[in-house]
Image (cartoon, rainbow, N blue to C red; front, side):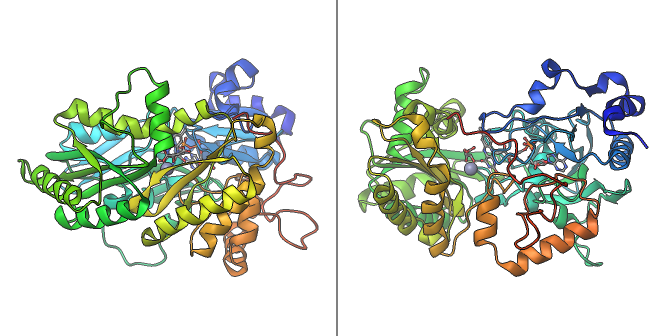
Length: 497
Ligand code: FAD
Ligand code: MLT
Ligand code: ZN
């Protein structure tokens, strides 16, 4: 039995010494996450080359009693890919091949370590579309996207990662490889196992490959930005556009003025697309597999009518691909631009689409009451009812003092979403960051079923111990999936921004 100390050497024997990293300068990219909220203290980073090697690594770690943290592009925001001392990070970046495209079946077989942007490109090269699209697409991996059931800007029309997977291959805790790599669109032969692993954040198994759904490539696209007075107007516009485009609306993102104006102030390449400033902005994209001007004409007519009816105050439609890219980039940049506003406390809530305006009004009031001077910085996927109702610090407050209120402010915003039948985590998952909210808001029956599933698939609590599932009440302080002696949030440090 390999002891924990000799585990790196044991792993090196299985997958090659150069694929087992232990030196801090080599492990940094895997142990530090983008936003600096958490830092890993792992025993080693293992970089296997295929499912068989993943299986061997899993079995070896199991024998040594070392927890495994599956990791993709390390772009997750909830600390799900963060390791504790004595654990092994199993990163899939070497498993980055597209294994095949079946054009007639509109499907693609990929290894789990494929970077999302590379998958999009491989689909494009075959006249197909893989529609999952998010700001981190240049570095996140499809395995991570599936493990977090990622959303992004095209969910309105194509659904989230769960809706885009036909089949999966997963390495289980006992080392077996479950080959569920079906390319079928219909198969009612038993439980849908793939959907257990999708969204499980690495707690049930290591996703090693997937069969993804493709769509016909878009032949005509229309991207526009509208300036609005209020979220109610955005809701009205959303309904009108869905009808006008015969439901070919792919993207509908709402951004507060504070967010758009911050991009325009701080990013040198950014140009104001509209003549005046507005309280709110809606970025939209319609797309069709049919070529020709018809779609654009419909969008244009719809926006012109909305202007006449005082639903919107101004709008611009991209004339070409470059302008379309600029408008889409504006939405991407609002995420980073928030750091120019000082410390930020982030949210990822969803409510029914029809309740988004009510949510925004109530959340704004609740935040003002809880912390006078705090500035809501809202943006997000309004078409899916998913808003990142972030908060920027009061200008006269120390960032550190503001950030110390992270949990309290989260609670204020999550309560509002909850009252409206919403979720405290619409797309980024639980990781270690939202364990408290999981305990508070998830119903006990769901939590009990989750724990039963965890115990059935991972009885030794090998995969991502301490993530997703909160410590069991009355369970002697031990999480259902925590390693002996571990506290659920160990390793976390205060946000740097
Ligand atoms: P990681 O961060 O490496 O891991 C995330 C979780 O998945 C961890 O729990 C990990 O253990 C598990 N995991 C990773 N790979 C595997 C695997 N092969 N098998 C089993 N478990 C695995 N998210 C959205 O949903 N929508 C957005 O619009 C969005 N925009 C973003 C924009 C930016 C700028 C950034 C930095 C992040 C954004 N995210 C968004 C969050 C993040 O990109 C997604 O959660 C993404 O899906 C994570 O993929 P990853 O490969 O980086 O996973
Ligand atoms: C986005 O929609 O841009 C992201 O989900 C926000 C984030 O990464 O915080
Ligand atoms: Zn998002």
